[in-house]
Length: 230
Image (cartoon, rainbow, N blue to C red; front, side, top):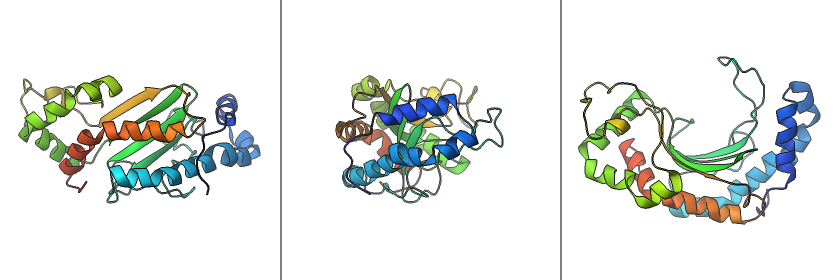
């Protein structure tokens, strides 16, 4: 592991080539290239970013291990997908809460692909007990929730709160509830989309930290609503 000074421009070249050759034979021939330009630099980013994460959200973990750590595997789970391409055409990591063992725990996210960079925070498809607890927190503390969802900084940076939801009101909530749009959600996240401009220098560290700090009030609410310490 080493200190992060930015990704190489070869990162995007690798993913462009993968996009055009997404099969096992090509990847096996380019596996060392993947480690050199994508996996290991991402591990360096995670290790370098860890002290910043500890400062802003000490219960969230930055694990720089290349296997089993914060980096998502490049291999796709194609068992239930019509798209049988074996490899993800993006590089991503998630800093999960120390109580979470999988992607359904609250977390901070970074995603790099050929279109640009995405970074944000939230909780993806929490299990029913946690989802119900989040809905209950929104219902019981609407003033605090609405201060967060209407925060000008959140609206400007993330274009508001996002996440797929039910088509109807969840059980126990009226269809005309003032916060029904959020109560219908099954996923809650903030996501900032940027260009590749800061990808190739240490500026990426500052940009990610700025983004995560802007999500602080939202993540505190989500973490506590899920019954976890922040």
